[in-house]
Image (cartoon, rainbow, N blue to C red; front, side, top):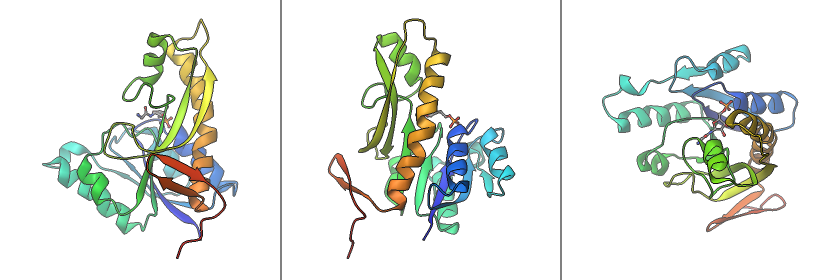
Length: 207
Ligand code: GAR
């Protein structure tokens, strides 16, 4: 059975595109059921349209409270019978209300080697700190900031003449590789979470 994904994206949507491409090539057993954006101008919405994926914009200021806004997102995710929420450049922090009321797991891709450089501008944070390696992380979302159990990571070198743009592009290429891989592991039910750790194994036998 195909895992039904809800993708939440705010911007250009290249990670969404990587998931669409992997799905269309038959590399991941998924069905991207809906793309939701908080930004009506997000290129991610156009990418979804191009592939006949339902794409919905929900603007925060159209809702009187954050809770009502987040509940609307949760309602859509239920309506589209999604099994997993993938944050793909969704630049809005989801509140504990959203996390605790979501009936499905939530994963995120972040452009640093967590727990280093959570939050905004992770690539610039890495450059400012002077690290020699950075990378990206796919993790489950919990109530903290980029703090849930890590599913996978990829490392890239930071070069002496890197700018935020060059480093971001090097990291992005790895994001596009590891995000579909992580989704595949979840779709195949091969990830077990034990406390902070995720264990990847053969398909888990569940009662
Ligand atoms: C990606 O680099 C993603 O890791 C980052 O936003 C970019 C979205 O690009 N996410 C975060 O920083 C989340 N804290 P995309 O719209 O082209 O996928």
